[in-house]
Image (cartoon, rainbow, N blue to C red; front, side, top):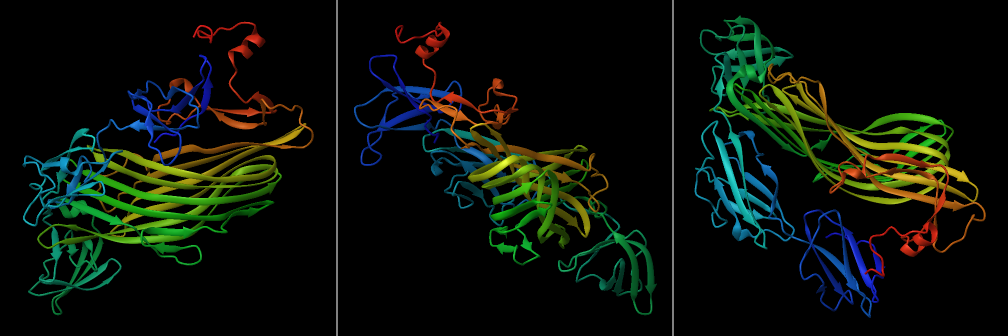
Amino acid sequence: MPGVGPIGIDVRSSSNRVVISWEAIPGKQYQVRAASLLDGLPWQTLTSVPLFATNNLIRFRTPFGPSSQFFQVLKVDTDPPEIWRLKPASNGIAVSRQSQLKVDLRDETGVDPASVRFTLGTNAPLTLQDSQLSYTNGTVVYTPSPDTFLGQYGETVRVTLAVSDTLGHRTTNSWPFELELMPVLADNVIVISPASTLQLAATNGDTFVFTYTGPSSGLTNGHIVVGTDPAFPYQRTVVSVTEELTTHTVTLQTTQAALADILVEGSIHFEGQGMALEETGARSASVTDGISIPLNGLPLYVKEGVKVEVVTGRFEFDPDLSIDYQIRKPRKFDLKISADLKLDMMLSASWQDSLKFDSSQRIGRAARNITGFIPTRILIPIPLVVTAEFRAGLEGEMTGHARVMGGFNYSRSVAVGVKYRDGDWTSFTEESSDSKVYPVTWEASGSVRIRAYVEPKIGIYLAGLIGPTLNVKPYLELEANACVQPGQVGVDVSLFGGITSTLALEIRGWDKELVPPLPATELLNLRALLWHGNFAQATGPPPLQSEKLVWIPCGTFMMGSPSNEPARWPNEGPQTEVTLSRGFWMGKYEVTQGEYLEVMGVNPSSWSPRSG
């Protein structure tokens, strides 16, 4: 519900009117309600017809009543339910033929469960009366029965969902995805299972020793031996063979085999949620819903007259990972890493003189083992290790002599990933955020820019070889400028919250064809102003006393709105940093036409009280 904007008095007629204004979303409708008490009486709707927003500001005038009045602005729900997450994703690949399908819905007034119609391919639509379909907490889930398949191997399946909200607004969405391919192993692959004539006896680095039954092992250079034991999976290319016929043993010198060497055609899917901390101690703690690292008292920089530390704080990280890999012409590869990030940080910084700094330290390390399978008659396990190294750091510069303390609570849901189609890599990002700023205290003569961050760097290792690496860096940036002039000392303080993310690709062990054109790509670079404050402290008699004026202290501020602000108009940018070297007085209230006429001698307004 949008907040009510400033309230003023309109004097265009003999009876005063209350003017209510608020920031609106263009194209949406709003209702205004009023009550004389906040409890005990029902709200009365003042707008017989909803107000339609043609821009990002709406004004509504209503007569000023004889008693106190409270006003409420409500955005009218005219939108159907929104689909905000699909599993599998639209145009996804390597989906199991018996995979569970999920659709997450959002709506302001709520979804009508009785309206749900779910259609898989050319089948008849299903309702929630069908045991395969369910709806709980905004999520529609389709679970195939044990004897039901989504389609044939390699088939592109289209799902359609039609749903309404409780007000009757209906939407229909349709999206395709591709089912897993039937696995076809290369002719030179030897699968080692409990029923095989070959059995692994020992390993030492790249040396593998097998026992066998029969007159010979049958192994030659170029064969690929693949183990099916999930406790010790391996995929090795034979480069030399030494066979002992009397003991029925064969010693192999091997190298790691790539997945594309094992499969002529097929699909592999990896999926994992959460991680476990490998490092424990004062700064590391594992929680059920993810990783939590306390930051209380963490020194970020102590050197050369500068001390920056986290007074209180905590970093929470809850990641999900999915990788889909499809081997056939053309190759397809999907990687998606999503995470809920929470950074709570109260910073204290003191310094003197001038200094630039950049430092970081490791505060934890986490890991998770994930196993994917090639779905042959005997499943072939493919090991994947995901590691994350957490670092806390600080960068910035300080001049003068000052001490400042401020902080924020910053929550962000981020999904980043990359797709490989037709020989090209493309990246994508999804994000939403929420923040709360803590009070800022200061004593300063100079300036400061400090950026404190906690950064998890994720590495994905396939069968001991490296794959993609991803870093996600949420940060708090504090900028302060202090100035002194006759009668006052002023300081201008801004708090920024942001996040950056970079994905690097090294596809050893996957496929020689999956070669990225660039070693790294920036997925995310967001920076938003969380809070801004101007403070003034008297150092003697102020140059002027007035009930109608307010003192604007010297300092620096960002003029204009950011390019990613919703409902932004082109003439609101570009953003420009403006520095006021001296403070000045400004009127507390809007200039009336009478005041303008008194000073300027003319009134250019197209409307005046007399003409109204």
